[in-house]
Amino acid sequence: MLDFWVAIPDSALADEQTKRDRSVKIAQLARAFSIFRVNKVFIYRDREHDYNADRRLLKLLLEFLDTPQYLRRRLYPRREELQFAGLLHPLKVPHHKPAVDPSKIKVGEIRQAVVAKVKGQYFADAGLNALIPVEGSAPTGKRITIRFVSEYPKLRCKAISNEEIKEYWGYEVKEVQSLADLLNSIKGSIIMTSKEGEPLGAVEQELTRELRSTPSTLVVFGSPNRGLRSILKDEGKHPREFTKYFLNFFPKQATATVRLEEAVICCLSLLNYLFTNN
Image (cartoon, rainbow, N blue to C red; front, top):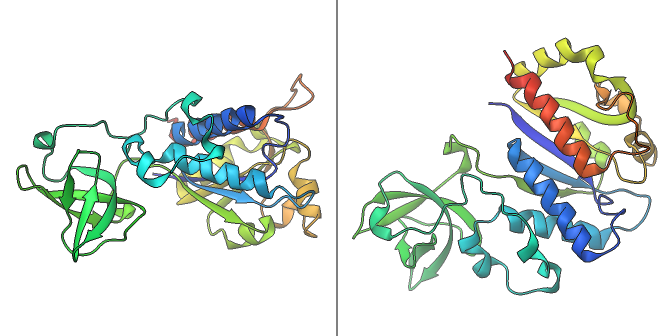
């Protein structure tokens, strides 16, 4: 299964005027990332202006939306940045399990949880209206994945790594200070999206072969105000230094611009088609 990674700038919200609109846009991005099984989201710095507040909001809301609802109150106390969280559409992804009676839990079932240590013993809150004893140790105070190792009424669980999970299990959000440094660190394929790029159709067959042979692909998006060529120029770099796939996914577009949330869902849709179509 291909790992899809995405990089967006901290200026991604620059075309939104209100906190409500910024929150809705982030939710649209989260939905797009989840639909197409994006595993990592990188938020890189756009040096045109100071976007620190927007970067914090992007990271906070993307992580909040990826968190199962039964863990949100424990991990996210009431705060101003989450003012419009109740308006945002849920992701409904595999790790967002519904609340169930503990007696329905089966051995081998996995859920996300938050672990606390009480009198030397680790317990997991997995949304079951009861704390579950954890075998061994586990990180406390943050979201992890657990697997149940015994059934009700003696439920017990253990912490597992996401590498042990076969289904889509959400995305990880990382902040990076330099887009160029991020690109230099990537071992898999890199695709940059740009109105100035080569039409996707010109490299469709070659790109399809690469998507199916590489373990991961990073898709990089520019900002609402400027493209990747300009963003990288501020770092003394050019897109062609990092990839041969500097692509226009919207040839002959009739609108002056394509909004970031539109670009993300359309580009990932086309790449998903290339990867999965026989």
